Image 1 (cartoon, one colour):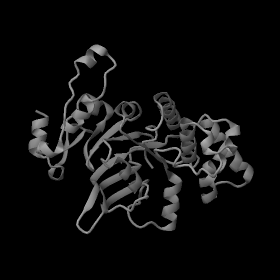
Image 2: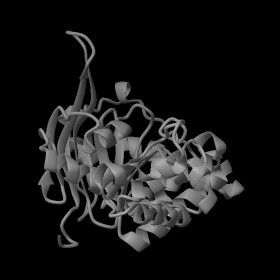
Image 3: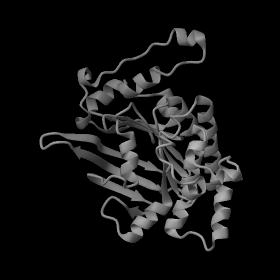
Image 4: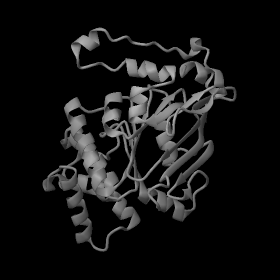
Length: 308
């Protein structure tokens, strides 16, 4: 596949959950974006905006209600055949938010990391399997003796490294990192993110980085999408989103970021945004191009007003 072709292309993705006969939650409502090989696309937004639901729909933990998901030239939005399912599971992996809840407490680290190899028969001998696990442990900064320990014997940061190793050992082309650092201390967050960046340079793996920490998203992402109430309101390069936000919701998010300079921080103005009283209807908005890569969801009148 050529480098200029998207590895992942999501078109008008909808994920609805029927609660009762009269009430359906529209968790994701018409989201579209692209992710290219070797890049990191950050999805940001407040809790309940649909970030994690998008990740779980893409990796097919949820059955998408509507829309198309193209991954490495394959349509993975419909019913998957056995071969398509195997292709998806070996080429796309997920790092979950809670490192303790996502690791089997009854299995040793070696078994957890090697489980994907066992399921898809990706080794020729037990010695090769052991070698792959040991190499992956070293790559994520864990010691060889950790292979026989259980998850409860590790710190939070170490457990998340086990989760990263479990995803990476499959040599995937895409990793969906779902709030993978939010449960960690700030110093450990930096270590984990730097580890992910180093591995990306080495393997050219693409990341869909889901988070609500804007500073961390700015640090790791090359492009960013801003979500609110299941709608992708604005997407563009990291520089465009942080230096020239257009949508009022994006502006409110940016204004909430603390500044390290006490003089600037003292004079920082926090912008408020309330969808119910804003007069904005996301369902009436269409994609407007600010420049070659910066899109905003708005009606014609709203776009003209915001870019005036």
